[in-house]
Length: 328
Ligand SMILES: [Zn+2]
Image (cartoon, rainbow, N blue to C red):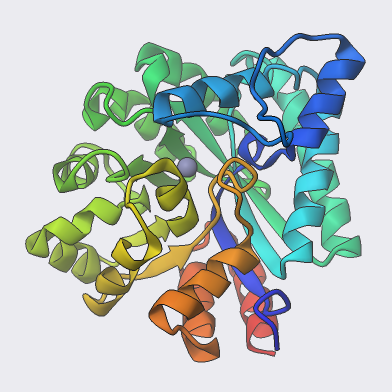
């Protein structure tokens, strides 16, 4: 079986970040919107560093202005995922980009995305769940609106809440109101930490926010033995995105990536693409590199996907069903 065909689960995927550049370009053209020079001469997203990446990301996202745009985007992204063997995915959704944080407007976006997800379950064989995110660098006040949207739309499709954006801004505890609001609505929690920040940021996230079950990235934990022990003991799963880390220069090359060390220390790691076209990656490529660099085989990948499903923010019936398909 090729790595492309192997059934996979992906837990860390930003919906707008998965938008193919040609999709964004054609939408910009159609709407006559100038999004500036965000593409290189080959038509790929162009940025020099993380700060510029965030700007290009927001410029690309600015052409997605209606629920229909998001419905079309969701379809394109799910087709892409399915092509690479993904049968279960969770995607980050930002009400800041979908209706400006207004709860009523968000409902329309959410309904449009959920409808496409439901269709894809039937015709592409992929299940999608949504995790609402606030954006850290927009500040704690701005995090309240997405949390309220999350609390309002919590249910079968919206199952989690998290925080993305620049980790250098503020302390995790500054966002406690938003996380408490989402948790009280029954949503499960994840948070980006330990990508750019050190192990102390992972620690602060777990200490200052109640109920965090997963950490987005968290790769900085490998600098800190006691933290690795804590993650393994408490069953905190890391949403590791190796290709993203290499593309953004968090690690200089695959050989230096700590995913293998984290796994050896008993931590449940999963593998995702984060913002695949931005990082010139796909789930197939991630698996190919893990095989090539660390010698991971089919057994390793099956175990990886089972760990992902154990940490998935879905109902038990879905979990059982996907686990069965992963084992088939
Ligand atoms: Zn991310």
